[in-house]
Image (tube, rainbow, N blue to C red; front, side, top):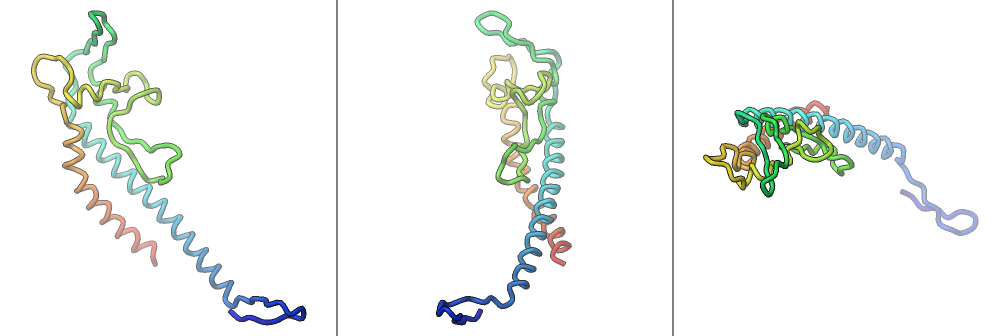
Length: 167
């Protein structure tokens, strides 16, 4: 960078190498775009695998479950609904576009046959059913056991793909 006085006496600035800086910034932006797409694909693949692994641990009920409230039938939950509700999804309008959630879905975003509105009752074992609940604390313990392995796999895959992109 060099300073010169012009005819009016004011200082002006002339940048040397501006084109080179712009070229480097453009290269960095292309690299970030490529790594972002790669990270999204890696996270999506691992979220899919983890949700499938979780689904395999859930065993459907032998018959439909009837839910009563104050002696009246409130709802009938078809067998297999909890297992069908397990999946992975990405939050809309998230700041990070490679963040995926894994677990049972609830609410208006899923069809009635896959809506696990009862998930906290099952997970926290708060129902009044004779016998033990084989799915109590299943998701929490599953995630605690599998997250360290998932992180190791993600780091290894990042290293593999970043070496390719850095060239």
